[in-house]
Image 1: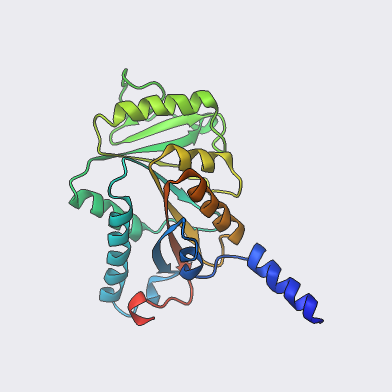
Image 2: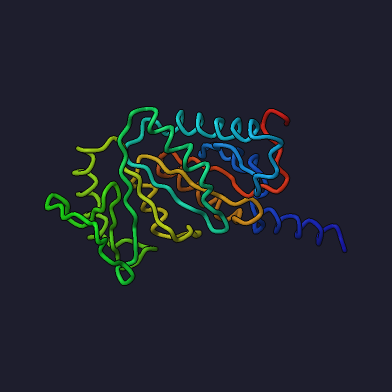
Length: 234
C-alpha cells in the first residue's frame, strides 16, 4: 500500500471511526468531560477503586451542572446508561437538597396513561405519575413547534415546584438529529453517555458543535472502556 493510501485510511479512521478514549472527548473545549467508566466492574481492582472513580464523576457532575435548572440526559448511539453513575448523580442531587422531577419524551402511539397517574390541570401536555412525567409526541426524533411550546409552558410551571427538571428519552441520539439540537438549546445543560469503541466520532464532533453554537453546557461521560486505567494510575 502506498503512503497516500495509508494516509487516507488514517484520515478515514479519524473522521469516521469510533470514540476510543476520554482524551478524545476532553480535546473538544466546548464539551465538559466527566471521565470514563469500564466495560465491566471486574476491571476494578477493588470496591475502593470503583468508589473513587464514581466519586470523581460525581464531583465533576456537581461542579459542572449544579447551577442548572433544566437538564437534558441523553444516550448516544452505541452507549448505555450505567446504573451506578445514575445513582451517583442522583445522590449528588439528594445531598444538595435539590428536588428534581423527570420528564420522559415518549412516542404518542406507544404511550399508555399510567394507572397511578394524577391529573394536573396546571400542566398543558405533561402527564404525571408520582415524581415522573411523560410527554407523548408524534415524532421522538423531532418535536413540532407546538410540542416544544407546550413543553416550555409545563417546564415553567414545574419549575415553581422543583429545583431541577430532567428531560430524557430512551432512544439513542443520532448525528444531525433535530431533537438532539432542540434539547441542547432548550435546556440549561446536557448530560450525555457516550460508548467507547461504539459511539462515532462524527457524533462527538456534532455534539461539540452544538455545545459551541448554543453556548450551553454539555457534559459527557464515556462508558464501556475496555482498556480502563483509573485517572490516579495514568
